[in-house]
Length: 196
Image 1 (cartoon, rainbow, N blue to C red):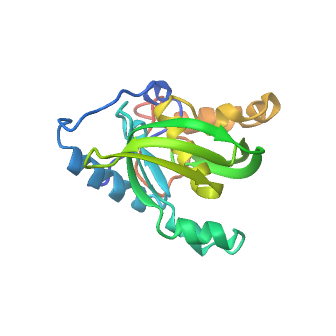
Image 2: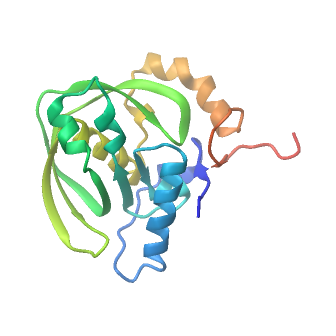
């Protein structure tokens, strides 16, 4: 089932998400619904807070990036199979020289900005069978992970922008929260005025 994506301004996007365990109700269906929702919106990642659930769960399918001519062969090789479910994820270490990449977010349509992040991360997480994993990600795989990870920490990519950039997009963000945008997918707007 395709779920509405929560728009900028909803308090759930600012909550520190809680861990879940194997007893979480209907988890398999939730993951399936999240995948359908992500693919319907042409996204490469979706975190549970973006569908209104403040739990430490996100999914990534970065394979569309593997078609991008502007990325390195190494990134293409990694991203073509980077399709995973991350439960109770933690970033253990971030390292390397910060680099800039243009990011967007399904909860903040039509806003894209350059974001600075570190290129190499060590992560711990559980998969959908609740098996524990420790991995090192770098390049675009690390970036996509960091973006989704921020969601379960109550952080949005716009938080990482300069004060000037934030001022420049303030009106756009207010309009998104009020539903004054055109989106190609279902959304839930926190400040939508009824009857207008």
